[in-house]
Image 1 (tube, rainbow, N blue to C red):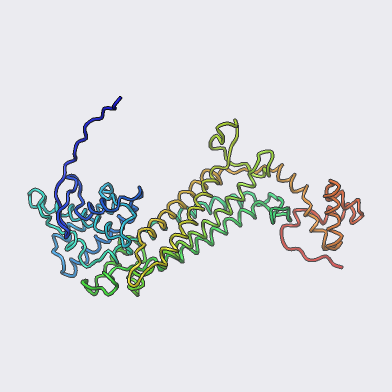
Image 2: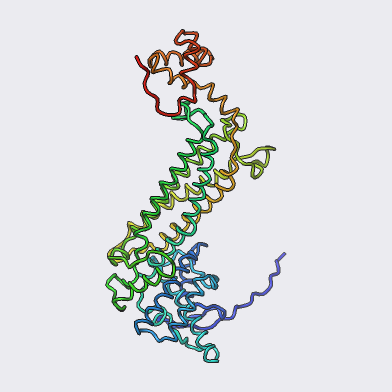
Length: 481
């Protein structure tokens, strides 16, 4: 039986023009011809240009309009209208007007023009309204001649990439990193007196405290924070002012430095014009360096999460030293099962960031002559890593670390059963004799103390004094011969 479907209604359109001629655009769209062409020619996937890039581009348009007005290059009424429209876009008021795929031209030209067209429409409508009339055709504000004045996609888009990355590091990543550091540091203090068995090669080793372990985790993240902050320094240098190839053709000599200074003031970032605009447009070493810091952070987080997962394994057939928070049912078939889901989510994020780093490294290596044309990919992966790491660290701190509890009975049981307490005997009875004690205990299922006494290696009093785990947590002088 044939299925009946309602007749489709053709959406209302209007005609827009660019240098290629006329093209239909949805009647209610603020964007124009070049955005429409991009939608047609780059219908690839479902990933859109990150909205953080759009907002950063809009900030650049605001600063450019202000500077062009100061330099006497743009009519004051147009400049004010563009600046106001750009700030509205930067504030997220018109996010639905930016539908372009991230898989477009490698310079980001279509998204730059998408922003230019939307800002031009908003500014034109504002000027028309101020004059008491209806929206004009053609626009009073031109997307290229006015909004893009003194700019090229080749310098504006990498400028937006740096702005977006720097803002995301400051506003999302570093707060999440510091929050997780604080959570781990709190546990380190709380568990400073919990003595447990250490492990190397996944085998028993000499004792540590749980506080020492968690203090180590906190220190790993502190190091990552230092590296990320250092990597931000070159990210704060902007390509603006280079226009097409780095020479600054068709822009005022002071335009780039003034735009950078205005953006620095508005966004409270130490932004400057890049000292070499050719390098800023042809290469993306600054973002490669920043993402290397994110890769380092992902590696540290994977290690920390893996340790916590192992210490929480069980609850009865694993290590069982830690009790992880029970956030949700872990199995659809095994009743009562609870899994380390926050660690698993964090681990997958870390794997994704490592993959992003590989793609960014390859993309950044493919610049040819005066321009790298993998910019949207680099922007997408960098911002995705920042977002994923920030969200995962927030979730891990709140839903896992904060609720961790110690199973002290299990910790002590594993500590007392360990053979590696024998290390404390070695300075007194020698390495070989101590190894004989450990092997005898393992072969005969004895405790280390019983094995040492059975072999006559030490007296009971000596064993209790020398093999006390509480005395094995730091440096000790060698035994006197």
